[in-house]
Image (cartoon, rainbow, N blue to C red):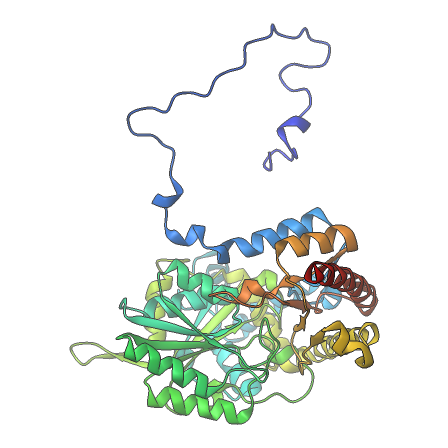
Length: 477
């Protein structure tokens, strides 16, 4: 029905039997066919990989369904960039700029044509430009050969996990709450997860070390730790400079790889703390990058910085990036050259300084964060906050913040919120691998205008007040 543009079989209207034709004689209702005794093309879910039944893979589908059913609702769910800074013509301008850049470097028209039309190198066409940008914007000084350009950051996660986790004893440690992309990738690859609960200021190295010691005591090897150190998704927390230094020291002490994912730094106003990778002196950090927030999501361009040396049994060495490229050749083969060209053109337009290119968007995101916090304070004034049992964090940037409420926020509550109050948000329980977050919601403000936020928070306040009354009424019984 989707392929024909028809919403349902009942909406198909006249087809083979046109209006006015005589109706065919009625037939008895068919009975369900008996299941064949022999082999069948039907499949049983328990015979599929267990990840397809994992709730992590269902959460976003439910959220998309709710958003589609209530298009008039104000949605704080999607962590999308604001579209007010996009211009369709810019895509063509950036691609042309990159093609001109190739000509200036001496490539022939035939070579340029090949670079656009053919598959291209598995590790990517624009690694030199990415390396230059990382050096200028992030203080990450790595050779282009240590970079693999990926189809979004999700592929970068998948490649890194597949390469690093070779034994059933290897365990992935994650901050909890945690971005569902990494937990979903781990489930797809049968990698065991251990969560380390975040505190108000982000992850505690003491808590992480306790988790490492517990895994070692169980006979397992803590292999890597995934973290979003800046304005994290979903909590909005940022690690302090001291915590970053302690994390690197802990990783060296326990032979731990840090998977650093930090897509919100360059779209956040104000001075940012250094990346873990820029502080990394022992090549403990694999840096996962994305241009979805800083350029545009439709490009689907990410990258992974993997400068770790890999030695084989003969003593020959390579870069971890080389091994990731081998895996990529069996997954997506290569990253689309046209998408790479569009991103490369934007890098060239800003002389590699994406932070400067994003100065206006970063200011916008800072403004809408401020408006969101102001509206929450307006509807839940401090004098009434203890009584309402509503509280929230105040991140310094990024796309998200969290609101704690006294009642349970689950899919049923989300449906009531959309249906009765016209506002959509995300249950934080989606982001806890082993359960948690039942009284907290995530608000994403990045996609909305100040006016939308003002209206949306007013609707959210009415929803919270109604649910709180109901919760207190049930609690009093």
